[in-house]
Image (cartoon, rainbow, N blue to C red):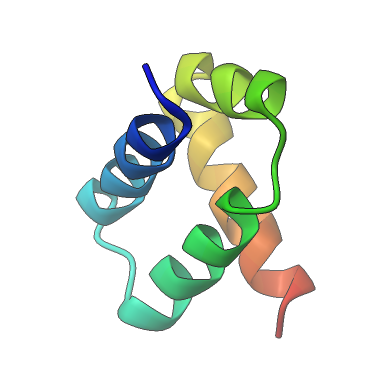
Length: 62
């Protein structure tokens, strides 16, 4: 999977969680700064851990 595909896949996971556009924008911005190994880890984490990661990103970037 290319870097772009990984970012898109993870962003789609966030969209499926029903988050608003502001949070989705923050998630996308953060994803673009991550290294390949970090993206790979995010693709594999549980749904609960993924939601917690999204909420953490939202709080950090407010």
